[in-house]
Amino acid sequence: MPKKIRELKAMLLKVGCISEPGKGSHTKWKHPSVNRKIVLSGKDGTDAKRYQEKEVMQLLKDIKEAQS
Image 1 (cartoon, rainbow, N blue to C red):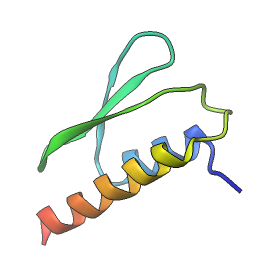
Image 2: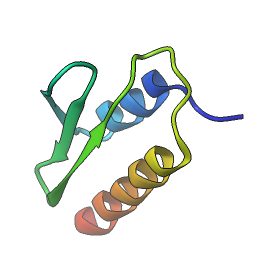
Image 3: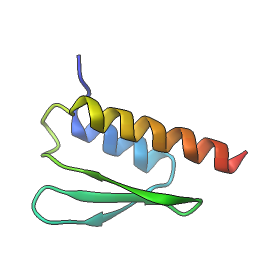
Image 4: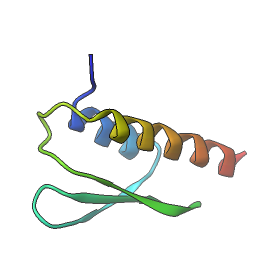
């Protein structure tokens, strides 16, 4: 079962990511220790696409490696 967009946003907020508003339902996410941004699109209640979940998981992995 896919995660909801709100769940991905909560995961990013928990590790200290900062959101920047985008057009429409898009939000840009970045972390101070990683030089990379990802964009999440969709309303909070919609199911996340597989590629969105992969992007978030990769960013979380990069953040963990940068903080080690």
